[in-house]
Each structure stands twice: as C-alpha cells, then as structure tokens.
Length: 525
Image 1: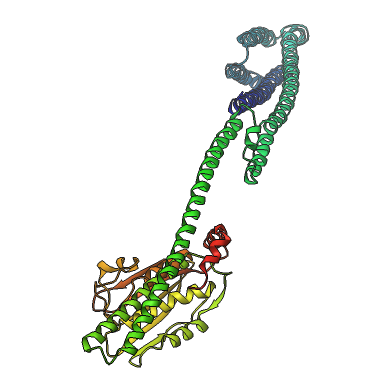
Image 2: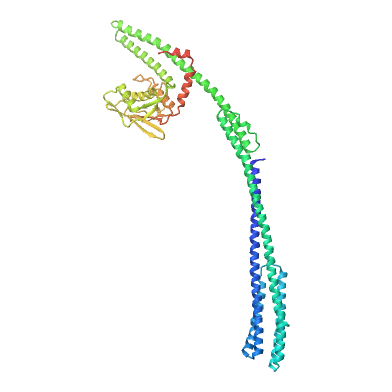
C-alpha cells in the first residue's frame, strides 16, 4: 500500500474520531443547557404557584378577619384581591406557554389542566364566600362563621391548597427526574468521550509508529544508501525493495546513478583518449622543435661563416641578402620557441605558491628595459596571488612587451592597475599607443595571428595566445578595451581563492601519462 494512501486512511480516521468527539461534546453542552433551562422554568413555575397560594391564603384571611371584626376595610381588601388572584392565574398560564419546545406537549397540557382545576376550585371558593357574606349581612353571623371554617379547612379552600401542594411536589419530582436523567446521560457521554480520546491517542501512536516504520526508517536507509553511492558503491540503492513512494524514489535515483555511471565511464574513456592525444601532440611539438632547431643552427652558422670569410667578396646586395637570411632564420627560431611556449602553457610545472606582485612586477619591468620616452607606472597596490610564478611572469612580460614594442607616441605611458571584483582580481594594462580596432579584439588572441601581414616587428603571433591560455587555465578570462588610434587596455581576471586547482590536477595527470622515454627525448632544446 502506498504511503500516501496509509496517511490518508490514518488521518481520515483521526478526523472522524475528532468529529464524533466534537459532536458528543456539543451534545453534552446541549443537555446541560436544557437541564439548566428546565430547572429555571420549574423554579419559575414554583414561584408562580407559591405566589398564587399566598394570595389565596391572604384573601381567605381577609374574609375571616371581616367575619370576626366586622371591619369593612377587610372586606374591601378581600374583594380587591380577587383581581390580583385572577392576574396570577394568567401569568401562570403565560409562563406555561413560553416553555421550550423540547419538552413534551403532554406535560404542558397537564399543567393547563391543573390551572383549570385550580380556577374551578377558586370559583367554588368565591361562590362559598358570596354565600358567607350573604349570611353575615342577614344577621346570621354564626352560620357565616361556621360555613367559613368548613370551606377553609374541609371544603374548596383545603382542596385548592392540596392541589397546589401536589402540583409543587410533582414539579419538583419532574425537575429531579430531568436532572437525574441528564446526569446519567452526561456521565455516559463523558465516558464515551474519554474512550474516544483514548482511542484517538492510541490511533495517533499507531499512526506515528507506522510513519516511523514506513517513512523514517526507509528514509534513513535511503540516506545511508546515497552515502554509499558517494563512497563508490554504485548499486547500494538497489537494496531498497519497498513498493511505496520511497522505493520508487530509490529506484529512480538508482536509474539516474546508472546513467551517470555510464556517462562517467564514457567520459573517462574520452578523457583518457584526450590525454593520450595531448601527450602525443606535446611530444610531437618537442620532437619537431628539436629536429627543426638543429638545421636552423647549421644554417645560421653557415651564414655567419660566409659573412665573416667572404665579406670582401660580397657586394652590397649580397651582404643585404645574407642579413635578410639571418633575420629569417631568427624568425623561424622565434616561431619554434613560441610553439614550445604555447605547448608548455597548458602544462603544470610545480606547486602553486604565493606570488607578491609588488615584488614581481618591478623586476619584470626592469628586465624589459623600456626606452626613456616610455614610462611604466604601477597605479595600485598589487595583491598576492596563488599560482605558478613562471606562468604569471609570462602573462605580464608578454602584455608589457607588446605595449612597449608597439608604442608610437613620443611620450609613451603604460599603467598597471588592479581592483577586486566579485571574487576575482581584475587587472588592466593601459597604454596610449596606436590602439586596436574592435574587429581585431578576438583575432589577436589566435595563434600565429598579427594585425598586419607584414609585421615590421617580426612578431610571431603566439605571445597573446600563450597569455590567453595561461589565464584561462587559471580560471580567469582576458579581453581588450580599445579603439584604433586611442590607446589600448588589456584586462584580465584572476581568482582570489584558488584552494582547488583543477588545472593543476589535469595537467599533472597529463604529465604522468607520458612515458619515461618520451621525457628523455625532450632534453634541452
């Protein structure tokens, strides 16, 4: 069963329990409210009956006082209290009409019957009182008193009070029964609620245990399996065989791991092949340069011998041709040296060290010996780089030598600056020379490319290619900001943090791939 389905069932069951519990709590509150309301109404009914009993008792007392004393005021109060008693009957009837709808109509009809019975008994009492007053007014006071006593103690008066007492007792019994029934229902609901709470707690514990068994445990195994994959156990995820979402996730990850393993194996084959090709190309460059330099040295020696031994036999044109031949030999030698430098730029030679450019740059400027009309200034405090001193020196030597070589102004200015920018050092070398048109900004970094076909400076077109290769291998980039006739700025970036050097690792692997025989064949060139 899916984890999602299990969770839905568990939470659905918990929700149903909560709804039932909420319904029971609402029912308990409703029972309590009904009991309290019924008690209040019953108390009101009892007050109405007690008031009615008190009024009738007082009225009867006024009649007795009149018969004993003959005081007319007592008779007037007796007659006036009839309206009060009838009003009390109406208030009682109105209170019965306003009872809550939840109570049975049968109980309400019984109360109306009691009220009607009491009204009938009260009318009988009034009729007897009228007869008593007639006897008293006719001078038969003894008979009037005798009839009053009989009516009050044995007749309608006694029946009226007895009926009221019975009704009050019945009302109290009914209220007690309602309260007792409500209490029993409340206790039952309370036990049911407690049972449901306990059931909900047990269900929650079981749900959490199921979550721990079905989710937390498999997630832990999935995490452990992924760690094993990171350690090289490529098939660790295949041990998770559950049929739920976590199992599907593990199988999906395992499929992706298999794809990545295949890609890595294929990449390793390609990289191994590339390392072999690079090693072969590098060896080819060394061998070719060695084989080419030997005849060049012979040609140059021959030219020097001819110039020295046959100087008096060569005319001016012949000497000029010998000088041209010597310059062409030198250019060929420079081309071969450039090829060697370009091939070496992609190799790692030694560990990286801290390079203080404030110490390095002045030495480079002095070695270039700029003419007196060219000023080279270091504008900013230079940082300390982590890298190879030989490669970094090559970068600044090539850029500064180009700025000096191509300066066409009577007062040349070359400025070197550096700023921090987004985790990199941004260097710039600016001059006020002839500048470079935008269409040549990319071309000058290509190997053997110069700005003109006939370069008066006999440039090899390799120096900037070497610079670009070194900068890129160190994680930076290089570009030109210039326009023709407005000077030139070479900008390049260098990482501030080179704690990880993939270039060094790749170059070291390439170096290790070369055989010892190939290393010996290089030799000094």
